[in-house]
Amino acid sequence: MDLSKQSRENIEFMLEEMKNKLQIVNAGALNAKSYDTDQYEDLRDIYELVEKKQSFSVSELDAIVSELGRLRK
Image (cartoon, rainbow, N blue to C red; front, top):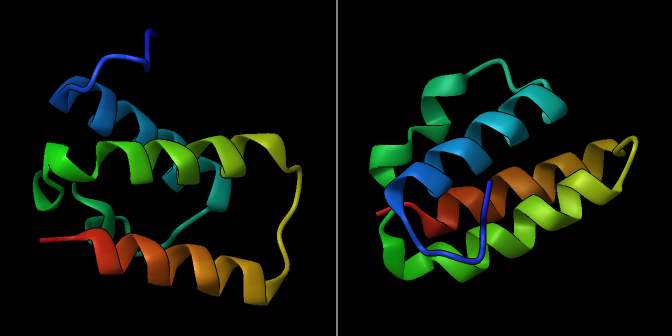
């Protein structure tokens, strides 16, 4: 997947991958339709951070989910 291109498909892909890796129970909170392509770079930065790490502390998870919530429209 070429994440250098800003697209709705890429947003959906990144959010699905983050849901799985972070084991988010309330998956509806990360609905791709809730994000504008204007926030693409921010979403990609969060995605890359999530992909680099193997595990997350509770405070890291909280910060990531809070940031994703802030980016929603």
